[in-house]
Length: 344
Image 1: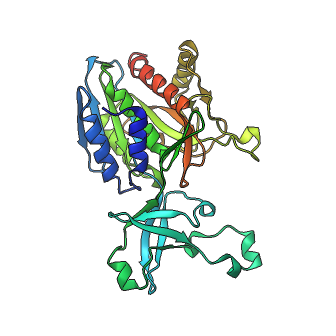
Image 2: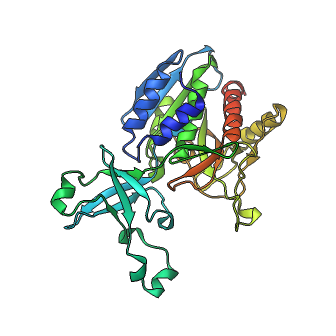
């Protein structure tokens, strides 16, 4: 049975863009099948749905959710000189990707995200960010025929990033949005459960897909807790009111984002629980982004939504960062919610 940090590293290094999450799903499945009282199935949307038997039947059916997919690229064209053109899978800032290493296709062919050489860039071009459609992936091929032996149209590419601890309390790696959420829910599944719960590892969140809604329709919960990573803007040159949240101040409990108005009774109850249990927690300042709750809360006759997020810097880039103390507090909170929300 792997530790939280071991699972987080394993999942961060795995390759799984939206719609291509099979490798990530297999890693999670192989691990959680070693946990007690867990039964898993995959639905037609590719979601991994894990049921865990508890000591008691809950008053409220409870579902936890974290998405498996990550942002990346999909190959759309191979030119005569063997360069790969691509489209983004999910929201990626083109300013942060030029010159970065990627792995392409099922076999992980190494490549480099390239652009026009700087001495060829015209003065007016410096005034605007580089557009994705002017970039390409260089895999070292000299011809289209050579490239086609290694890569085919529709292949995915992901950032080729290491996973590392740094500072006293931080880790960096790709896809911490939302592999960190997956690793947190794996911690929940390790322990003996007080009540029956269901944990869904979902697909296609980064492209605004409805896969989580498909899972929620099948599970039919009363309450759903989405465990996610959210943007921490606590960096230089960003004013305090734009921070959204801060690293080191605990998990983020949302009352609203761009996709969901969260259940306010549950929001207040969770914040009170955090205070009573001495768990550092914060709310999300600023209405930005959305997550799987957007689709979950609309399923069937409506589901009461909750979001618990990790503050993460630099998401959707080759490296994101989180603090392990925030993750530890999120794990503590999720375990409490697995009991408290069943009987609220």
